[in-house]
Length: 491
Ligand code: GLN
Image (tube, rainbow, N blue to C red; front, side, top):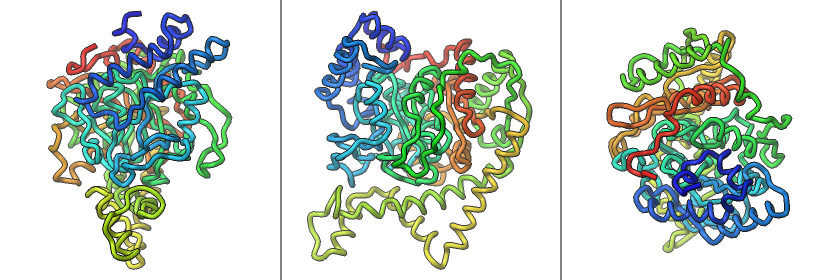
């Protein structure tokens, strides 16, 4: 296979090229490392690349294959969001606070990919501690969108999204607390799925808001996502919220036709505030699903508008607790100058955290304080329940919910950094899914007039990932949005 087709290949295609020995894992890994070498200076998608380590892993994958053992992902390079701890490798979470942190252990997700023989291609850039929607809060500088390098790639998993979109990696991992897999996937024209809460272990995934955080895969097709889910998902006793369920084959339904599928269209997702071109592309995609045999009906999620305010109480509350561990004592940044212990804590945290992280810690501490707990935190918990109930009611009438992933397409760098509330509102359609713990997914469904990708969101009931992936796959068999290569990073 010529290099351009390898860079552009599906995971299945790479697996068969490796199986047929038309290429070795070492050669394939080198190819992606070279592409990173030539494009990362522009995109800033990776924080850490350790070519020697990746090539050594690739060598082991080739040796394992030669001795007859190989799983489907064996020898395939995968990039990981720099929120997953990787033993012996820098794990920064996009923060100055962890800019010197070499993890002594691997996250569960990292272990799973290693056990599957995948090659760790590098660690991707992200919003600091996954707080953001544009990958601009990273201490390592903003990530650029390969469709227009003057625009953001979305966030917080923007490095993973840009890497996959620009063919710097065939697949990547991300995490999604309020939209951080789906929204960057939408803004860069790739696919991403946030599984049901508890399906992917959070062990070794640096905590932001533990009751909302969930890891998931990012790739160029639903079929690729299914392969990655088969590796990432599974019970892990080290995460108390990891679900002990039978192992599933997430690709099992891919051939299932769409006849009879009932798609709910929430009227709240198609009203004011959605860019006209986004709405048009999403409607066209829904027509395509109807042509494929699905039925659509209107549903209502009346508490949608409460989800952003509830999230911005709950997520900061959990973050303020989770981030208290970064104190300059055990690991991470420690201030150089201080006179006593308290000053050491203060200076370390003042220097180590960026503005958005500090804002969240302040809000979180405030809403949890004795005088305000009932007024804010408890109220927000009640809203969370109402938001979740909306979905329970809607799923009585439909199998999947569809709508836009984000209200607009990629925006220019710096356009929203001065206005946190504008930035928060980008997640209006994704956050409710995390509050309810449901699986959500984004797939590309077209472009706006400026050539920027539009994402279609699919929301399923608990544990319906296989069904969602199947629906997306049927759509991708008859459309080619997911195959388009970004203009600024041609092959
Ligand atoms: N943009 C949201 C936030 O800033 C969600 C981020 C995420 O999912 N990690 O909190």
